[in-house]
Amino acid sequence: MRNASPAALPANQPASDKTRWIQLAVGVVCMIATANIQYAWTLFVPEIQDTYGWSRASIQVAFTLFVIVQTWLAPLEGYFIDKFGPRLMVAFGAVFIGMAWVINSQATSLAGFYLGAAVGGIGVGSIYATCINNALKWFPDRRGLAVGLTAGGYGAGSAATILPIAAMIESSGFQETFFFFGLLQGSLAFIAAWFLRSPNPAEVKKSSKLLQATHDFTLSEALHTKLFWLMFIMFILVVTGGMMAVAQLGVIAKDLGVKEFKVDLHFFVMAALPLALMLDRIMNGISRPMFGWISDHIGREKTMVIAFTLEGIGIIALGYFGSNPYAFLILSGIVFLAWGEVYSLFSALAGDAFGTKHIGKIYGVLYTAKGIGALFVPVGNLMMEATGTWSTVLYTVAAMDLTAAFLAIMVLRPVLATHVTYSKNLYAKENEGLGGAVPA
Image (cartoon, rainbow, N blue to C red; front, side):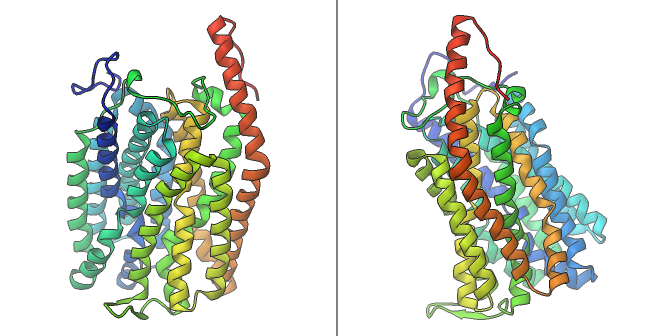
C-alpha cells in the first residue's frame, strides 16, 4: 500500500485547486495540535524545578531528548510515510503525543519526564514529517508558502493556548495541565489525520519562477552531493540559537528580572513572560509563510541571507538590552520572526534541489540537524552558569547565525546553481538511456 486512499482520484484525473488547499489546511490543524510539546515546555520548567528541586540543566535534558528523538527518527518516518501514506502516520503520532503529556502528568522522577519526552518526540516527529512531506508534494509551484503555512501551524499553534496553559498551571498545577491538554491535543490530531492523502502526479505542477531539479534524487544520491552537506551545516548553525530561545526564554526572563514585570498596554495588563511567549509564537508562525512566500519569488538563498542576518542582530540586541522588559518583548519577537523560517526554507529548498519522489527520506536526514542543535541547549545553561550572564550564550549564537548568512550568499548560491544544472543534464541523459553518476 503506497499513499493509498479511497478518496484519491485516478492518476489521469486532476483535482481542483481547492483540493490541495483543503489538504494544506488539514495539515496545519495537525501541526497546531502538536505544537505545545515543544513551545509550552518553557512554562513547565520553573514549576517542575520548584516542585522537585532538580537543576535546570537536568530538567532541560528532557527537552533535548524530545528534540533528538523527534529529529533523528525522521529518516525512518520518511520511509513509513512513503510506504503507508499520511493518514496512518499522523494517527499514529496523535496517539503518542497524547501519551507523552499523560506520562508527564504522572512523572515524579527525572526518568519519568525523560520517558515522556521520548514518547512525545516519536509522536511529534511522525506528524511533523508527514505534514511537511505532504505540503511539499501538493505544492511544487508554491513550496515556500505551503511549507511555511504548515510549519507555521507548528510555530504559532501554541499562541492561542499559551495563556490557558499558564492559567491552568497557576490554578490547578502543572500535572493536571499536562493531562488535560494531552488528551485534548492528541484527540484533535487523531481526528484530523483521517482527512489527509497524498496527490497523484496529474494533480501537481512545477514552479515557473525557481530553478528546480528535474531528476528525483534518491537518498544515497543526495548524500553524495555538496549541496546536501552545505544545507546540513547551515541548518545546524541557525536552528541551535532558536531552540535555545524556545527552551530557555522563561529562564532568561527570570534571570534578567523581567519575568514578573506587568506590562500595561492600557486595554489590558499582563506579565512580561506570558505576553512575550504569546507574541513570540505569533511572530514565529508569521515568519514561516512570510519568508516562504518571499523565497518563492526571490529565491531561497537570498531570503536566508535576510532572515539569518536579522536574527543574528536581534540576538545581539537581546543580550544587550534584554533587562528592559519592553525591549525584551520586542527583541524576543524579532528573534522568533527571523528564526521560524528555517523550517520552511530548508524543506522547500530540499524539494527544489532533490525532487519529491524520495523527499520523505532526504528531508528526514536533513532534519536531523535539529537533533544535533538540541545537544547545545543544556550547554547554554552550563555556559551561563560558568560566566554568570546570558550575554555570552546569546553572542555565541548570534555569531553562528551571521556565519550561516555569509554561507548563504557566498557559498550556497553557486553550489545550488551548479547542482540544478547537473540535475537537468542527468535527467536528459536518463531519457536518452545513458544514465549518469551523481557528483561528489
